[in-house]
Length: 295
Image (cartoon, rainbow, N blue to C red; front, top):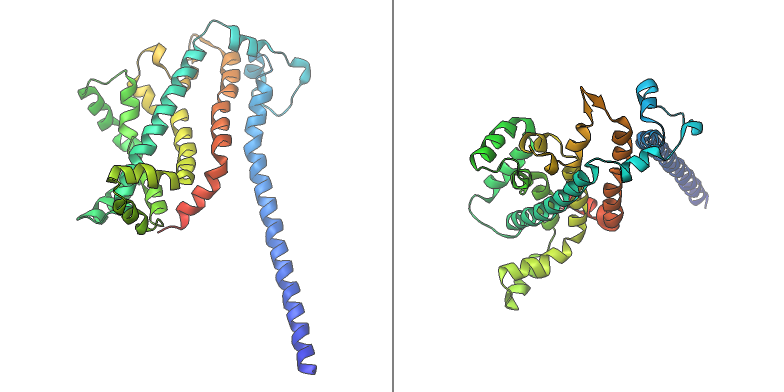
């Protein structure tokens, strides 16, 4: 009985010690993520309050945390919606390009990833190593060869030049392949037994189970396409074809700076990405965690 009592006391002490350790870890994570949330929110907060202030105020005092409600007005927003500028043309161009880029990139990358994950063929591992190698190559390294290629194909100053080079995205292929490695091969065999074609299997069986992965990559690729600046700057010449990032950059020039439109336009440009995340957040975490552990 004495031994049982001692063991019980040791068990309770061990449990209390483990509970204190777990509580300490939880508190540490809460503090860490609170700090990260504050660091993320501060720039958005600063941009938001600056959008209600006069553009000249930014030149004089810069961006700051002081709301200064006495200076607030809707003049900047009136300029955004009613002013004589091309902001909404740039905004429309970015929306169209982002949607097209995301849809085609997900489709093409899913095709490639499905081939790597579901089929055995000669040179599969070697080709996949090439995909991994592409992931490690900075865009600045291939920027000039891509520019020359688009010029040779006479695609300069077209949206094709923006979309085509990045349809088979290496990071997206890698993520989809890792996700699909956890897919039961019996699913494909069942589809073949039922008489489905290889394309039918992909579109009717594989794509539905890839919804979480598609959601995660739609957000990441959408953000990249929406914020893309360097490549459109190289290939687009016509002002009416500018994306939002290019158009906002033209507001700053040696002949005059339109900070009022720049700040309120930048603030408004966050909304599509926010909507994109809200639309796919249901599957985002599931897709990211599933893609991380498969393989």
